[in-house]
Amino acid sequence: MTETFDRITIDPQKMSGQPCIRGMRLTVRRVLEALSAAGSRDELRADYPEVEDEDIRQAIAYAAAMLGDETVELKTAS
Image 1 (cartoon, rainbow, N blue to C red):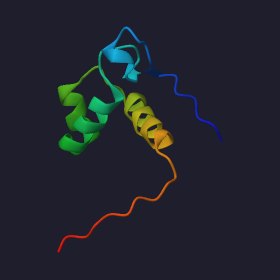
Image 2: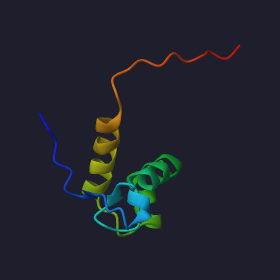
Image 3: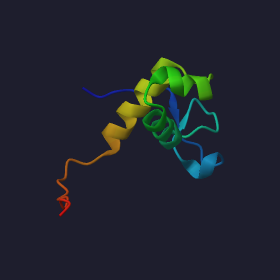
Image 4: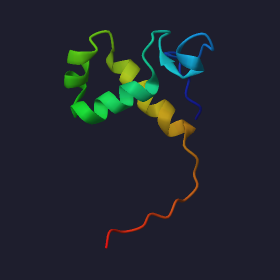
């Protein structure tokens, strides 16, 4: 199944062509970083009230779709 990312926009004239949310100057990367730091969607929306649930869902799905299926070996802490 192929997902349509209708809320993710890429414009070379905005944010150096990074994927953004609905043409805003808010990148997918920033949404993911903010979600990670905030810990919840409600906390993220407190900082970014223009972001909707579907924006967040598509940002996560877009990031997952951009990842390859390759395996990366991680070193364990000694």
